[in-house]
Amino acid sequence: MLGFLSARQAGLDDPLRFRRAESTRRVFALELNKDRDVERIHGSGVNTLDIEPVEGRYMLSGGSDGVIVLYDLENSSRQPCYTCKAVCSVGRNHPDVHKYSVETVQWYPHDTGMFTSSSFDKTLKVWDTNTLQTADVFNFEETVYSHHMSPVATKHCLVAVGTRGPKVQLCDLKSGSCSHILQGHRQEILSVSWSPRYEYILATASADSRVKLWDVRRASGCLITLDQHNGKKSQAVESANTAHNGKVNGLCFTSDGLHLLTVGTDDRMRLWNSSNGENTLELYSGSRDCNILAWVPSLYEAVPEDDETTTKSQLNPAFEDAWSSSDEDG
Image (tube, rainbow, N blue to C red; front, top):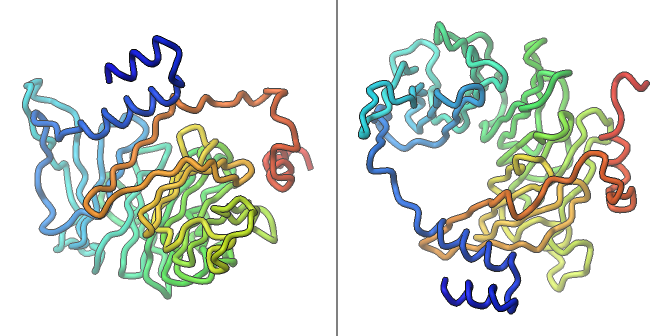
C-alpha cells in the first residue's frame, strides 16, 4: 500500500487503480462480526435472504427445509454483543409451508405488510406478514428458481418468475393470474431482476449462457441479448452472442440502474452498461476456493438525467424509445 501511495504522490499511477487496489484489500480483509449473531432456526442450509427496504430492520430467510423465518435486526438490548432474534417463522407444521426448498424470498418493496416466496414445489406464494397466512398462491408447471418484484414500479404489480422452462412468466398481483410470457431463452431461467431505474425493464439470466434485457410493454419483448465480445467475432462459435462461457446463475443491477452485474459457472463476473448492453470489460474472477465479489459505487458516478453529453448515438435505439415514453404521452 505504501508503494501505491508513493506512486500516486509522484503522479506515476492512475488514481482509479489505487481505488481498486484499496477496495480489493478491504474486501479480502472482511471478517464476520464477532459482536452480532443471528438466532439459528433453520435445520439445514439457508438459500435466500432479504432485508426490507423501508426501515432496514426486518430480514427474511428461506431455507432448503422449506422454512421461512422473519428476524428483527434491531439491537433492543443496547448491549455491544447481541443476537438478532427470530420474530416468527413459517415452520414445517404450518399449513401453508412450502413442501420443498425455498429459493427466493422478497419483501414487498413499499410495505412490510407483505412478502413473497418461491420454491422447488412449483409455487410462488404471497404472504400477509401480520397473520403469516397466504394471500395468494401462483402454481407453475415447472420448478421455480427465482422471482423478483420491481422496487420502483408505480404502474404495474408484476412479479417476474424464472422456472425450469425457457419462458419467463409475469404474474400480476392485482389480477392474481399470469399476465403474459417472455420467450427467447432456450433453457431454464436461473435469475431475474427488474431495473431500479426503469419500471418496465427486466433482466433475465439463463442456463443457455445468455442474458437478455426486456421491455415488458413490447410485443417483441427482448431489447438486447448481452454479448461478451461486444459484437466482435470470436474463435469459438458457441460463445457468440453469449454473456458467459457457461450457465449464467446470477445477476443484479447496481443501485443506480446504470450497470448490470452477472455471474456464471465459468467463475467469471462481468459488468455491463445497462443502457446499450456493452460489456465494460471489467472482469472479476474467482479461484476454485475463493469467489469474492464486490461492487464499489464510487468508481462509477451516476449520469444526470438531463446530461447533454449522453447522445442518442450512445444508447440502443430501442432503449431510447422505450425509456423515454410514458403512458401519458400517447
